[in-house]
Length: 181
Image 1 (cartoon, rainbow, N blue to C red):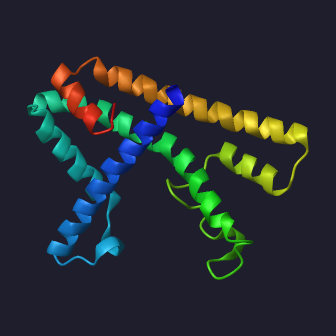
Image 2: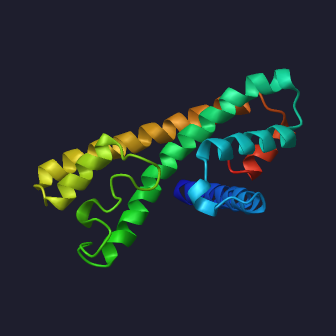
Image 3: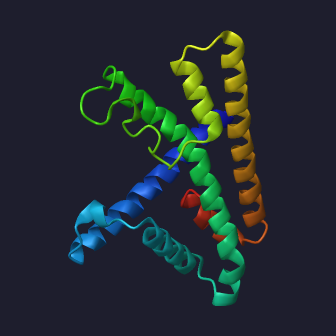
């Protein structure tokens, strides 16, 4: 059940991010922008924070307290999602064969894919898989990777709990609907 809840939360965040991304892209098109080439993640995040502030209907002094807590949730959520999505996209990339046509060979985006740089644990696990490491080496790399993912998930749950402590029920409902809680 917990796995299903996590997957639904990830899907919700992806939908929210997709909606926001499409909205930002449409605004760029309306302003004469060139689409994705001009996408600025910092600007997108700032716009998202402004929308959250408006929806929560908070004053500047309240926002000063809420904003870092919301930012922490967003950052830790991104770290959790990046590990999961990076693995999913790796599977799609590798499905077509040996990845030698065009796109840069074995490095073809794997190191700099979705979510930025992979964690050292993810790198070590991938190297163990690619080198067909011994069972003991594979188990060690897998255990470290799983521990890293658990730590990120715990960080997310802690950040969400800290944010919930200062929210009204209505604000909690808004942030839950947006996929932050």
